[in-house]
Structure formats: structure tokens, C-alpha cells
Image (cartoon, rainbow, N blue to C red; front, top):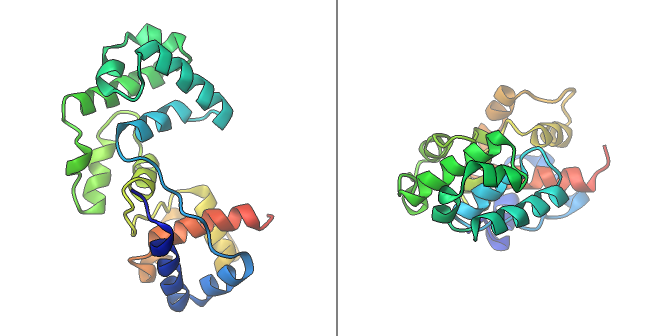
Length: 205
């Protein structure tokens, strides 16, 4: 499971001691709620379905894919569903291929969520091996579903913008600079990202 409330708030308290700008921001906007996703196939399958569409559209497509496959939570059923049937349910050709790829990896056991490497970078590499799973998706999965506390999605635009605002930087930091800035925050970089998304929601741009 993801990082629960107690772990999240304890980590942000520790982060505030390391970086006073975080402590000040927490005083301004309060602590975030946890962001927890289900471990395993469904969360990544939903990530593929939801790429580049609204939340409402993603829910509608998921319902159609679920009907077309006889259960989109079952990788074997998804893998056995014809690509044309997935496209008729609302997936683009590319997304249908990605869904098949993920389902086959899980159904055959080549991707085993219970055996992901303990090292975060190695786990990310294992996930991005699957077509349709990029680094950002892998990082978000490991943070929200696995509760890996030091995963740092430094390529996320919202995280870059909000960390820049929290730290009072003149410009949005690049991914490279953000990774360097966050080195002293280990092992609390995941909660730092969760707080950045919370800050973006609370504080108008």
C-alpha cells in the first residue's frame, strides 16, 4: 500500500527540519492527505487507459474495456481480448497495444509485483521495460501503490513548479536541478512530492 497518514506526516515533519521553507509552507497550507493506490495490475492498467484523457473520459473508457474483456482487472482476460475489441471499447491502437503488453507481462509472470527489486531505480527499470509504462508512471506507481518513501518524480511539471515556489526560486527548476536540490531531503522525497501536489491545489498560481 502507499504511504499512510502517520508516515506521510512524520516524513514531512522531518523534511521541515531539514528545509525550513517546507516548514513554512506546511504552516501556510496544512498537511496533505495520503495518496494511496491499489498494488498490482489494475493501477497500471488504469494509468494506460487514463493517459491524455480527462478523469471522466477515462472512467467511461474503463467501463467499456471492462465489459469488452469480461473483467479488466484480470490480466489473462485482457491479454486474451482482441486488439480490435479493445479499440472498439475506446482505446487508441497504441493504448490497446500497451494494455496487451502489460497484461501479457503480468499473466505470464514476467512482471511480478511481489518480486520487484527493493532498489527503487532497479524497480523503475523493471516497470519501464513494459511498453506504455514510462518513468513517470513507474515512479507514481511505486510512490502511491508501493509506498516507497524516497521515490522522487522530478520530471513532473507540477512538482517542479511548486517546489520552485516553495523554495522561492526565480524560475522553475529543471529536472536535473530538482534532483540535485532534493538530495538533502532523502529519504523523504516522496512525501515532498505529495506535498508539492497539495500545495499546487491549495495555493493559486
